[in-house]
Length: 143
Image (cartoon, rainbow, N blue to C red):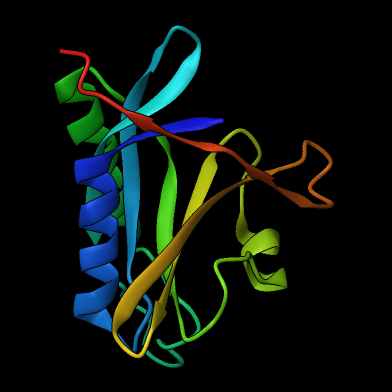
């Protein structure tokens, strides 16, 4: 289960709309509230992939480092990542599974003809064999 502030869900959808027909990507920064990972910041990251950007994204290591530093400065953690699936369901691909890390949350937004739709969230199993969908709770700002 992951909790997502509505403003951050809106930011993710808007990012997907702006980058359509290419995939967008970003980091999910937040904290645990009563044991539930709660996203407080959906931080856009540039998709630096050179080819096939409508089906894949790539995060530059220096951008990832900046996200880690931002989280630390804000007293937050990197809870996971988000990306869009232009004209495809909000379900992880085999490529997504192969490149995911256990214990991180992966939010996917469907963007159909530049209109953001469904948002889902996924966790990779410890043995890395499957991604399981998890509930998304609407959260309220805690601080």
